[in-house]
Image (tube, rainbow, N blue to C red; front, side):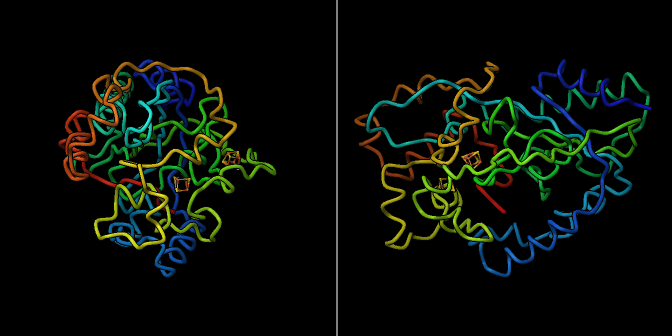
Length: 305
Ligand code: SF4
Ligand code: SF4
């Protein structure tokens, strides 16, 4: 039977910055929160959040006989800044490769290693079982249950050493491990509320979290014209929002992990306000996706519950 420390070692050798594992169970408490969130309409036009609710809270509804949720994280933190006045792009959007592809490539490496070393038939042949922001699964909750950090007041996973600039990858296994990670129970936010105070739209003040007010949602997900009240918050923003991430003390000096695949795209980073000014917003978004090689990106974006 595969031991957790062995899995973690292989995950590190597959390029991940940290890894943990939790037993696959239905997330009853999160299911109740999700229902409350949906009933309040906080998902806005993210209809996919209302679809497949049972799959979202129960890994066995995604992969029958799922026993183990393996969670891997990879930092995309980069010290870089766009030229003054250029339309702002969140740090994840500045990477030179599509993070979905990068994470899936490394998850596949880990899956192959597990299969080769253990000889176990631990992965479904019929069901998709490898995800990064591409399936109905509560990735941040699983990361917390796998001992990788806590869900902060900014609704992001906060890894105690890597901060919140991490991508989360999931592997669903149909085999049990010899041992599992302890869930992360420490409340790292303590009495801090910097992200709540700095959020420009008050999205973090509501309970449940109101994604409709979040700039990430407004600039990535939302297709309809915006109401007047949100225009000041999205002015000068092209893609996503890092304000609550930048506010977080755990992101002040995160451990540096320079993943070349997720380094900033130099062409994107070099574009000045003047370079962007000759194109419409639609063209800007197209250019961003092309430069970040996101032509095939699918799945679920933005902040959810
Ligand atoms: S991403 Fe921006 S708008 Fe959304 S919660 Fe964070 S600070 Fe607020
Ligand atoms: S800024 Fe403070 S309250 Fe917000 S997520 Fe970070 S530690 Fe938690």
